[in-house]
Image (cartoon, helix red, strand yellow):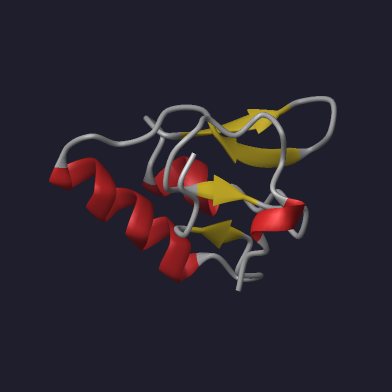
Length: 78
């Protein structure tokens, strides 16, 4: 499970985030490209845009559930 205390500072404020366990596998960026981006220097993904519609939430949840290292969280409030 993702650790909210270890989330990348690049994450947009809101429910979803990526923490420092990300292995840069690209799954989230392929699953939900409107919400996840890659930090080119660090080699990890982060949430750059929070979903506001159910379709986007579903895409982010699919990415969360598919993440091989559980680096995506959905328990942030900011």
